Image (cartoon, rainbow, N blue to C red; front, side, top):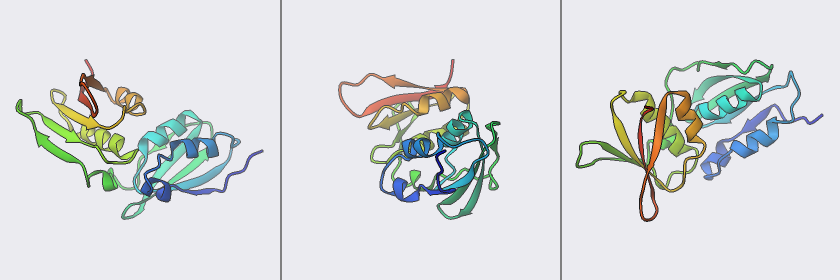
Length: 177
């Protein structure tokens, strides 16, 4: 039986620019039914919570303070994601450093270069949550958003790569057809 401390603080990893997804999966995958604990993060990591739900973890998010969320977890086999105790979806530093400009066709372009994972993904999910079905937005990224694809499918949106001759990657975000 592998036992992980019931408390994992992801804030130092995220602040250092490290994506904590693999760390969390490695720590929680071997836990047995009934294990409970919590994660601390600078935002509500909904994509991570969805992944943990597929691993039989139920979760609830609680906003503790500025850039401090506590995600309560229990491996109960149900995989429920309860609503946050604060209805605000906090992006934390994803707003800082993101540049929004208007293109010639009137569409917006969101430049997320320079932001450490998972902040670009969270910013895109936040934008998708507030877009109208007929809107599109162009997104500029430094890497392919592999973890973003299933999250967008789940909410009925898609992100399509626009061909470029070199980096950065350019994508078009819109409602799935």
